[in-house]
Length: 119
Image 1 (spheres, rainbow, N blue to C red):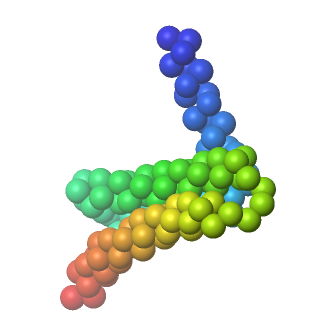
Image 2 (tube, rainbow, N blue to C red; image 1 turned 135 degrees about the vertical axis):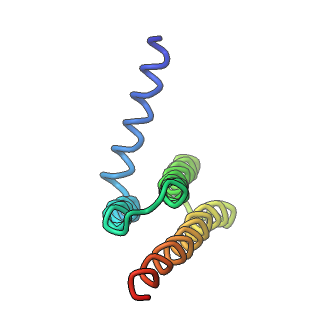
């Protein structure tokens, strides 16, 4: 049980570190709060909530993985290295792809809610 608690403690430390050191993590967290508030206002159904939660978790998780990759690459080398650049750029691209797909998903869900209100 101590190992499990310690594992959750390390994960919590990772979230705190990402939040305190990564501007994009803070932006994604802020947007998650905005989307959750909009979900309450628009009364999302269970399926819509599930989709939104998966999107939020995917973006936040991808940002954490990106932060870890950047830190590991920085630990390996402080000099310019083309392979280090590729690793960092591809990790950032992964976050971008997940973020765009999540935004598109959110637009689809909330646009249908808006059209229901208007029509």
